[in-house]
Image (cartoon, rainbow, N blue to C red; front, side, top):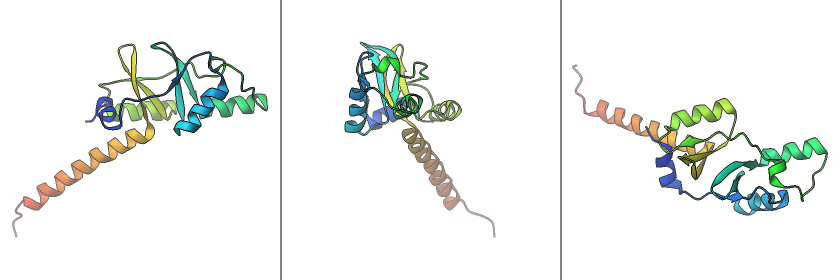
Amino acid sequence: MATMKNILETKGYTFWFVAPDAKVHDALKMLTEKRIGIVLVMDGEQLWGVFSERDFVRLAMKTGSFSPELAVSEVMTSQVFHVKLDTKVDECMALMTEKRIRHVPVMDGKMVVGIVSIGDVVKALVAEREGVIRGLENYIAVREFPT
């Protein structure tokens, strides 16, 4: 079974982050420029929270508009679910489904080493299932059946 480490080795360990005092405008600009759905909110190596497209929508709906000068720390999601490098893909999928989240940071101890999306997890699960199917097809093809 593939792990988060396997996914990150394929997609890369790159992730994007902003400081807690960064402005919402700057976080939105990063989301747009990088074509991503989430940025981590970090103070040095410490993970404070996440700021996502959903956080922006909630802010806009709550206030009827938004101030681009608000600090990200004022509107971020502070309860962050994470996984470890050795977390299996199906365990990550279960967490993401249960918590209704689309991105999850990958931690090595207390250090963020990457982030995986629901798309990354689905892609890994599909590849794994295709490998099992190919193996079963090969097994069946070489077996001799009595006639």
